[in-house]
Amino acid sequence: MFELEQADVDRMRDELFFEGEARSKKLTKFWTLLILSAFIAGAGVVSDSTATVIGAMIVAPLMTPILGVVLGIVLTDRRNLARSLLLVLAGALVVIAIGFLLGLAVPYGITAENNSQVAGRISPRVMDLVAALATGAVGSVALARSDISDTLPGVAIAISLVPPLSVVGLTLEAGAFTQARGALLLFGTNVVAILASGVVVMALYRVHLHAAARESRRRDSRKGAIAAIAVLVVLVAIPLSFTSREISKANLEVAEVHSVLDPWARHTGWTVLSVAPVRGGVLVRVSGPLPEPSIATLHGQLEAKGLGSNHVTLQLVPARTITLTGS
Image (cartoon, rainbow, N blue to C red; front, side, top):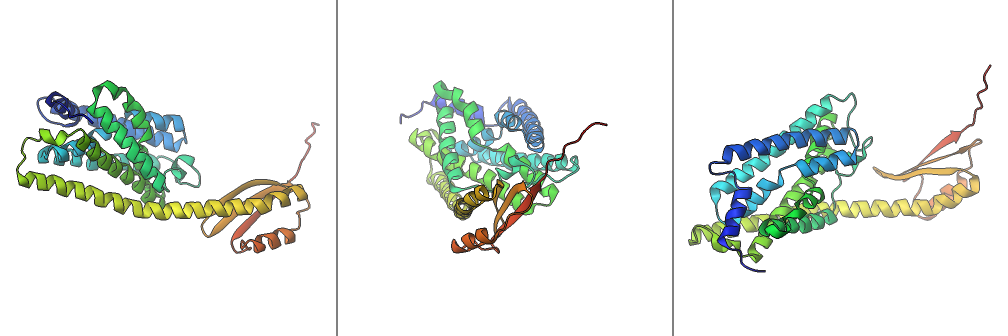
């Protein structure tokens, strides 16, 4: 990597820090875009619209103060570091609050059981951290190099910041606290990943050489902040590893149930509607004509694979065809 010029660092400061004569204008822009993106994301989640949620990702300005935290650490600029960190925390709370209010306007609770946008954001895995680290690195490089800044819209889509917070608010309103915790973990994972990869990229570009003060106390402060980020990455990776293991286990069980269920369904003339992991096992839904088929063979085959009746719940949905004739 090459060393950035002072003009490049000044440009980054202007893009990320809320300071100087344009501070009020920047803050107004930030809060306007954040509030609008929160409503867009919340509406997209409630309506289960992926396109709307993506639109919120593009509009959302939260990555600016997060990268501001990175630059504040690297330049040992405590005032802008604190200001950027406060904006991230305050912004996150505002988005959660807007999601909660939108949940109050809906006559039913928005949860993973009835909404795919929620379901896709409550169980982050290690691969989500890996993807966020790579995406954060791309965003940091695009910031450092103005010639590739046109990649930032793609970065905004890839790094999900506002939608998980909307899910937190909506699931809190619905009383689904475990799901809210999972969505908050996804947001935290993305933030920590941006911080970690951003610090690494800034180090490669030797941005720290442009710090206003280089006394040992400032250097120690920078090292302490970087160490704290490293600890956060480890702390985030622990629950992600647990979730990844649980999801892999559930997917394996679903595959094993499918291997037994599909031949049985073809033999009986019934159709498999769904096989889904649920708390404590697997839920199977099959449909077909009456009379209901015997499940003795299916039970025996499931038992042979260690998937007994206490582990697999089978729902039989009889199908009837009724011809309605006019009078």
